[in-house]
Length: 47
Image 1: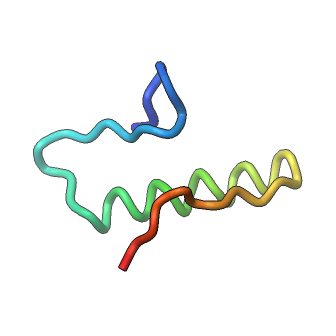
Image 2: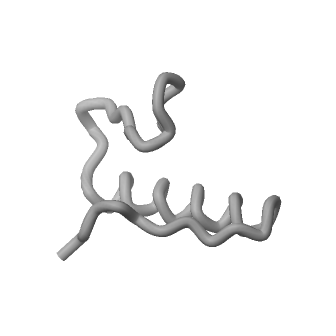
């Protein structure tokens, strides 16, 4: 889930893996774009 304290942090459970986190990032980006017309940019680099 996205942290209640800071939206730039993702809180996971032990079973979560990279793919789960990456899907959550993509979902958050697409929902913000749909609702507000804003395209979010990642501050981190994924490689």
